Image 1: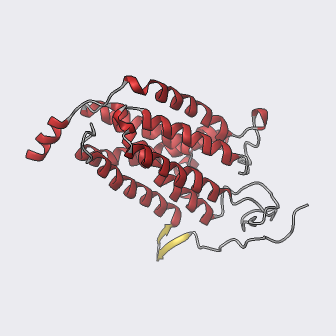
Image 2: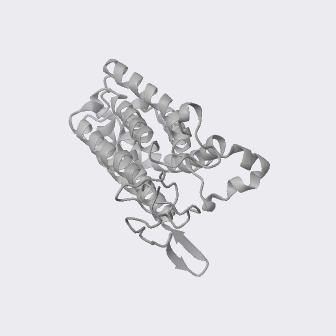
Image 3: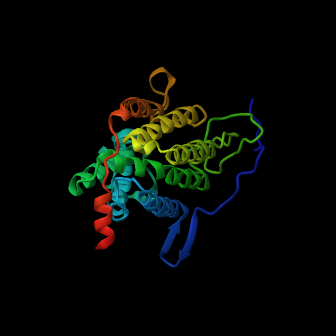
Length: 281
């Protein structure tokens, strides 16, 4: 039996960060902006390190492609993976992004497509560019999960743990796991720290290794966190009592493992001559 009162009070933070007349800026939007900007600056620093086969100006040009991939991929992924029937019946609702509905796995596919197209158009080693992008993705994951928590959405399953919370938008008003914070910690902080340590130790000398660590690490963190997160109500539990988030993470983990196993076959090329030409220009 669950208590009728929260054991830890949910912080009543207004989802609207700034409101000036008709202009309304939500914390959720600011989370996307913060993740993209901070990730971009860190990616520039990573590209500046000696021996990196990606130039800082190439990362600088990539940011617009990535932003489009995140937004379009995240929205399309949510429609296809989580709520296809609803949007099929009412297609115009797909344009109402301000009402919520973004999928990380869809956003990831959008980012992958953006990186592939950009790398081909510029003649950049694909996995070398992917490694830089993968290293900074946890920044956006952290801010996104914090925004989910502020919005009081994507909450956890009912529980009696001492840090349980009652979320205002929960019609059942049950104490629940603050699973958004679990995900912010594991998918954001822990994964980011792991990638930075491995990057400092030179893992990017083998292209695809860092991307593989990200894919495996995120998949493990997401699968674990989903055991505490309430499944999406329109889907519920799926095969073997799994959730959509867990099922979508399995192929990610397998691809990541393949990248790790084969990384030693892909030494990073030397593009120092291009960097010197860029400095002279």
